[in-house]
Length: 128
Image (cartoon, rainbow, N blue to C red; front, side, top):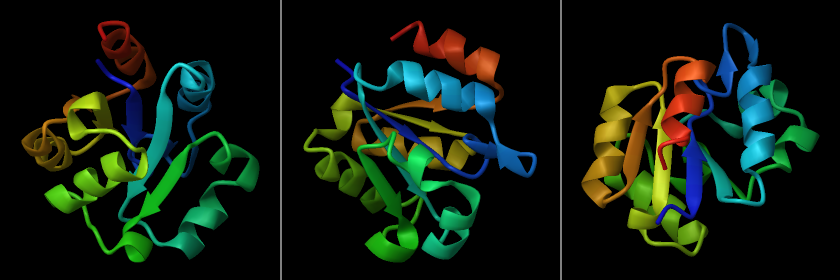
């Protein structure tokens, strides 16, 4: 059973030079039903410039590779994310726009959704 949804930042939450309001609205609906996290290879300075603290507060964990030392698509990034959420990888779902990152997560036991657009994501999430 999925207990957490882990989002990539650049390419899912932040697209085309701005935060994707449809994805943020979906995150708001998922909050409370699932633990939510961001796993990103972006650094903190850039991340903080792109996502305000109010939006950051919607997540249970913000795991940036520059701080954790774990980079996607390496398995360590995903194992660490599950650990920080006090869950097993099998209880987590990664949403990412790069197949290589999905592959890394799946190797740890996570489920993965290759992100294309908000409508496709909603459809995929309705299946879990």
